[in-house]
Image (cartoon, rainbow, N blue to C red):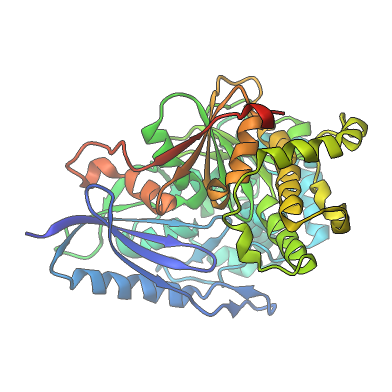
Length: 463
């Protein structure tokens, strides 16, 4: 008896993964690959699109050869802000330009001056000014700097939709990619922004398909369904939307700590934009207000500094237990500084980078202080998307969800909230599978794929 499975391609910047999930969303097969980057015509690093294309077909051939599985469906999630430009025959015309590629300042100024200025435009598109990370700006650049290439483009497909196109031959646009800091979507009108039409870019964008839609594969004799692909941040939110119906905020922690509030669709204010807020679009087409903090990166840098100063191995901080008494003594020690900074407001960087490590009695004390400083930032960042919403629950996933000091201090920073550490293997991949659940899975939606650990406010550590 063959096991019915869905095949998910989860394409990150570094790791490209293939998962097979059974109908209970358990991983029954996985494979990981890394590709050597190539360069574009300017010598800037970029994804090797041909390696990625070949890998999709090779991986599928491999799983189809396995007699124990019956592939019922395929779907894709990838990092965002990346476009593949295809011609009439579906062949790529240009490199997969890196979203970190520097953007010409004169072209940037020309764009924003033409379309209402940075603040007004950013509010309309829920997109901070991010250069190439605003993927629509990559198309604008091609139109103005490479008009011959622009003329040849039949469709500009975001990366998840290009991978889906390889299997279906059907070009699609998807709202989770379009709606994520692309400069393409006007959130105030729920339509493409005027500039997209005025510049003729609209003609290069494939029809919008529903994020939970499926299409047949273009190969005759195959009866599996193929999803249109999803932006990875939106995909990671899906298991929470499926499992929890009470309003919540998800703090997704990694290099960036992103607070996602699917229950806040108020327009972005100038102040929120200044503090690194933006909007994502969830797979059902509703806006998700989000705020970002570079806290994972900062944690990594400061842990190295602490470990070097105290001559310790940085691994020791991964499972350091929470010491509430140490928090109390640190707060007393910092009381004067806290009074001076009481009205400081949101910070771009935590105060820890400026602290003298010689002032700490031990590395344990220094590390507790680091997490305290990061939580102060996290409080302000999450508060930006929480305010005026009915949310009473915070879920934390990713690296910090396993950090007892972080979780206890977060619970004390939000005493009126229920705070949970959430753990789930491969949230992005599972979300991508759940999006098309009804098209391949005969079982009801699962309600046990997310493990939760509740953190209550300990009295002596409360803020």
